Amino acid sequence: MDNHSDQIVLIAGGAGFLGSHIAKRFFYEGYKVIVVDGMLDGSGGNEKNLHSIQNDIRFIKLDICDVESIADLIRESNVVVDCMAWTAHRKALNDPIYDLRLNAESHLHLLKYLHSGQKVIYLGSRSQYGIPDVSVINEETSMVPVDVQGIHKLAAESYYRVYSRLRNLNVISLRFPNCFGENQPTQGEDVGLVGGFIRDLLDRKLVEVFGSRRRRALVYAPDLAEVVLRLSRTPISGFSAFNIKGKDIHIKSLVELLIELIGYGAYQLTSLPADITAIDVGNAVFDNTKLGEIIEEIPLTDLQEALTVTIKYFKEKM
Image (cartoon, rainbow, N blue to C red; front, side, top):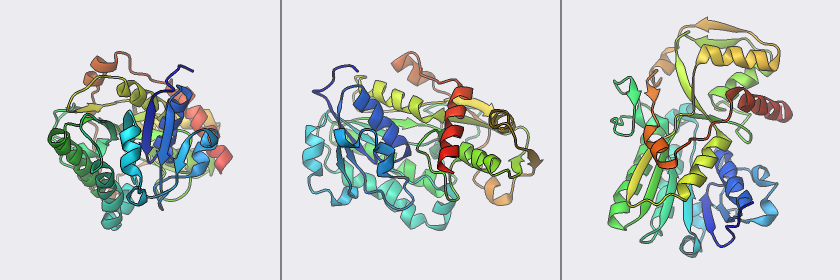
């Protein structure tokens, strides 16, 4: 562990899937960690995600809007990481008001207390881009979301973009695709692309693969946490956005690899349903050249190794 005991990081949403990985990464690097998480319904927040470090960090179990000391907490923090989110794309279409609360409004409760010179890392989303008419998506690609979650994630990023100029904030928005790994939800409708396939295969269900040519980029949660840590140490002025690509793979190949790692399972190719077609983001390649120029070598765990860990986690939870 490096000695960063004089450095404090405030992680909003730090008991969630990605937030807990980020909290642990900073803690094991020697930082003092403050987590604020109301563990709202569907958010993925769970104090069990932090059980290994819970006694060694400051854990405030409140909705961000109910934390009376939030201004003081921000003032004493060297960096703020905003992980607050609701990632249930399909549910958001049926409950856009709740998605608005978690993916847009919640960030305003944090943002209004940020002060001049404050460094913030906001976790954005690939969904902000929608379905751009390009073969490669970089940070300058137009963003026209095609679902509610993407709209609200873009809105939250836009708040940060505007206030970074008005209040002299130093903000990084990190846009990334499908994430997977330990601490991700294992129950319910929305457990992520990788999680859904793993769960169905472990339950010995026939997996449906919509088309043979569809591709997705995947990010392993510990790799994302490492990127956030490195960006927190990167000098930056004003607002900047970065893509993180992760591993690009055909969905069919992903399912075949999961079957190989699990040791059993089957799939069938089928047509893409109309409701999914309407919000499907296409096959454009996600480019993270800009990020690589900032942190040099982007950390990527071997995909087979990362999937093996995730399968083990699902087996334990199921």
